[in-house]
Amino acid sequence: MIAAIKPAGSNTRGLLAYLYGPGRHDEHTDPHIVAGFATLGMPDPGRDPDATLTQLARHLDEPVRLRNSEFGKRVTDHVWHCPVRTAPEDRHLSDTEWADIAQRIVEAAGIAPPGDDLACRWIAVRHADDHIHILATTVREDGRRPRLHDSGIRVGDACRQIETDYGLRRLMKGDRTAGRRPTQAEMHKAERLGWDQTSRDWLQDRIRAAIPHAGSAEELLAHLEAMSIAVKPRRGPSGDLLGYAVGRPGDLNKDGEQIFHPGGKIAPDLTLPKLKARLETTAPEEHPTARRDQSATPWHQAIDALDTLHQRMADDTYAQAHITALGELIEATAQKAPAHLHAELRAASRAFARAQRSQIRAENQAAHTLRRAASDLAHTSTGPDGSALATLLAALVWATIVAARWHEANNHAHQTEAARQTLHHLQAAADRALTPVVGSLATRRPNDQTRRTLAHDVRAAVPDHADRILADPVWPALATVLADAEAGGHKPHQLLKEAAAQRELTTTRQPARVLITRIQHTSRNPAPNPRAEAARRRSVMVTQFDIEGSSTTYPAPPMAQAGPIHKRYR
Image 1 (cartoon, rainbow, N blue to C red):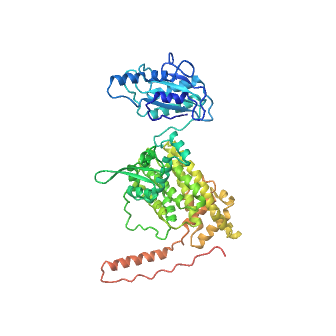
Image 2: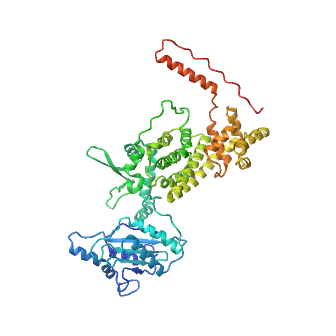
Image 3: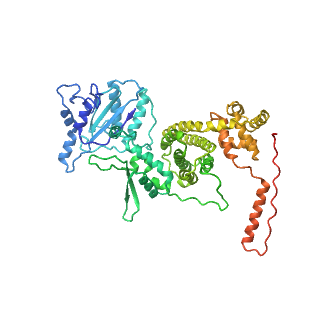
């Protein structure tokens, strides 16, 4: 059951004309009052042929007129309007049941608290099987205004209880992180202009698409302007940015002027302070010996950044920061992926927007590595090879599962559902990206003896999942990956254990496919030789000693020769 409180209005007679009228498409049937503040003596134009809409409006507005005649400041925003609708699959409720529901909603909202004889005047009009409209005038009989702060939350809680009591479809409890629903006027305007989205939805997609490209709020606005979006910054006397609003090209008011929407009215996490917190955090200092793999592409660096995500979820503020940054990485991936994956990845990014935000305050600096990976990917000019793309998408699938589990553990119902919707799209994209990779690997399958030896490694490394892996149709492709890795100096048994540790296999649908992507990423470089690495370190130490001013130069010891790689397969 949805109860959508509308913005306050000023024309009681006008709203009644809509409620008792035929509707925009003749969808209103038998309009009549099912409940009200005092049904006795109240004119009902739907049941009494002598009653008029003007009489009913005057009856409801009487406390408003009395207050306005006694006080200098007139009340104009006095019309409270709340449609209440059941789900399409719910049974049709009787007038008596709707009357009880209306009473419970006005009590929860504060329009008519229980036992208050001086409450606001209100009615509930039914003109369809599946919904009613509650109209109230928000001046009490004693001239005071009702306390309606947070009425939406209280009404939502009442609806959840009504669903239980009446056996209706149960919706998730609100948590104040949802964006505003499009108004009917916005939807009708989009339909009239032939737009697929309302202006606020369209602008939200563009702002989220620009975030991975920006390192500050100023850069974000500049990027939006480059996308031909109208931007109206609000600045202080010093020139500092204090707020912003954006407008969709072609979205004009009746006077032909551009319509602007503040960021906070587009989505709760797109206010200027929240964007600054995400974009302008200071990068943490790296340890002097820390080195980034300069040979890795942004695609591989993004995979590496995701590999530690599950380790960052113990602290809630860190977890929220990483989930927010994960949304940026999904968006960057959607922008840079091949065209045949765009639709699924765009849908994944759009679905994950709700999962990115919760009531937990994020420690954004903690997710700098993941956010940097998203930025690098957004700015790269090189596309991924097939295996890198498949591996990244598989890593995004696992990261989304981790995010969904964290939200579920914290009772974030809406975010959990959003993550699950995202997962559906990501899995479809990952399966599509992996298909050509598997096909290519399968053409190079090792011989029977080699596959039997590798099967032994699988049973030893991941015994709990070995049967599923070896029965998977893509097992020959996994065998090819393991044989290639061993040729590069890696140990298949060790690679399998490491891959299973990075991504648990119990919940995966096809573990062999997960292992293909993980092992391809891990083994893309030859395995390091311990003796060669020790010799390199000694050489670096001697060179550093010489640079620091020693009068004696010690030659570096000769580099040890790597021993021959033992091959199991001839």
